[in-house]
Image 1 (tube, rainbow, N blue to C red):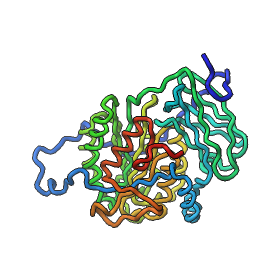
Image 2 (cartoon, rainbow, N blue to C red):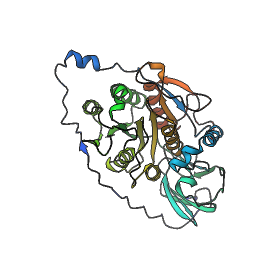
Image 3 (tube, helix red, strand yellow):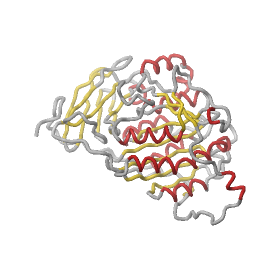
Image 4 (cartoon, rainbow, N blue to C red):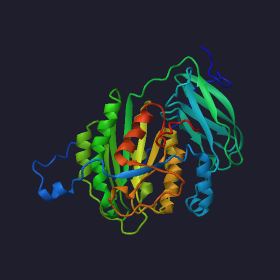
Length: 400
């Protein structure tokens, strides 16, 4: 067999890292235990919103890198408060012999300051942000790529400041395949402030998954969810395990109501911990997406935080798709745009165009495309399954 492009190595494959599971006490919302009511009361019927009403805008910071760097320069306070340095990036893409993206390739970047592990997502990409992963790293590094039984070592340069050169690793002798499975997870803030939009989000999920299935009939779809509040609430965490029963999943979601919270920040970190470690994400090459819907920044409890969640999502190949609801402030926007950029997903925020919910904050950017939330989420998922990644409308990866 011919070696992969980029300083091939005959060394044995790197040993897989041990996955550490954190135990979090939650209330399980089981699909089997939830039964639809035979005849809902009229007041319940009035509360059920028809699908395709929420509107949303998408901001593709990972594509419009120059605009994003300008945004970062305008918000040094949020960057310092959240301890997120997104100003350095090295972009990697792993391809087969024909230039098609290879998903779930295992990557290990070794520097003199430590190492970081990752898996490519459905578009074959992994974006390395030294300021988040290895703040002291710079200079020469070795990237090990493992894909379809092939191993290659590639020497790369980590910049002291700014962005490094994009690196493409082509693996000849293998052929990329269509995505056969999607793990679609949801992490949703269900404190009282989310009540105005929560029922609309729940209502639209059935149609979103149905449309994704219609666009990709060969793809097996599993859905799961984690709902979080704050530590002092009577039920701080609830979870629905991954299931292929979408109807049962939606029924289970509708049994979860918005309550609690009190102050503005909520326990987003516990929600991320449970979503990443408490849901049984597939260990194969399934496409993995976690949709985060929230309107408040995280409480400062310490322990596992959004920074660790970002790193773990990278290691496991989970793309984080953040959605800001009404009431989100600039701190939420900065965090969500960082999480999206880190996993090459756009920042999505609900807008006032629908007339639903409380006022929504416009993103600090020069251009947005407003769609129905239903259409936006469907489009992003379908394009990702096709190996094209997640982008603003009309920007399917042509800008690197």
